[in-house]
Image (cartoon, rainbow, N blue to C red; front, side, top):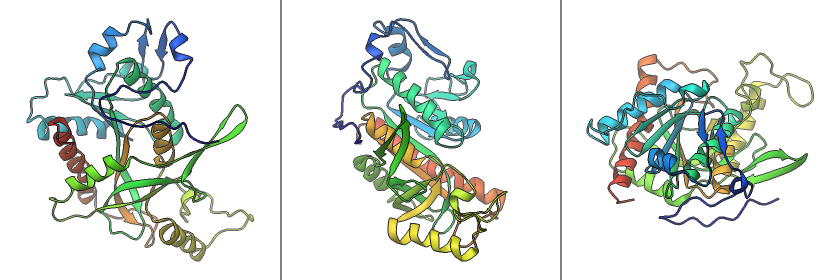
Length: 318
């Protein structure tokens, strides 16, 4: 089954990919603890969220709060006019959301399943608020593949653990595979913002997202290390797999969300990007051995790149 073909253009609200929503008298976004009491009259939701231009997503609550603070200082010069320290989704007890100007920074947890729940409700929220062409950008950490630690990868496509550029989901007992492609125009804008950065690399590459951090990524340090034949896989097996990822698929980093994120946003007509820094080169080992202070500096690199893009986007040059 193919993905819904949605043409993307500027200055437009999100297309309706679910005809049932317009027939619902109300909608409770359970995991965000946001109630839409009247889906035909969303003036209050539009007042609160209708100005959103960029949604930034990352795994940890604390990291997203740090990002909101960083954007307040580096995009709005310390005066965003919003309480960026307030967790808007605290009553849901699952995700954290921080508003800073026209940017919403939201945590998504670890893996596609937790991020999928969040995305469905965020996309509905943006639709009810009548946001115009909101951009979704994931900011995170990853394992590098053939690149040095600290490299920032702006993703072209997401690949699953079977090395297919798709996200597979079972719907009504049937397999549905959707293409996992990130928005080209947004990716190029982000890469253009990296041209003036010095001292660290920003590259374009494909990203593999797996459902398992250990065996699914070919690691040797998990609780289990068994292949499809029921035997332990070896260092050589792991390296052969990772080299296939690198050489045959153009994969430059590995995490746990890219295929689902790319597929669902494309399916729903949202321009999206994935910007992750690498913490190690998986061709050289499985464990992160970089000193804590250096890791902290690495994690701020996507902040710098994305904040530069957001500033240009807000000023109307994107």
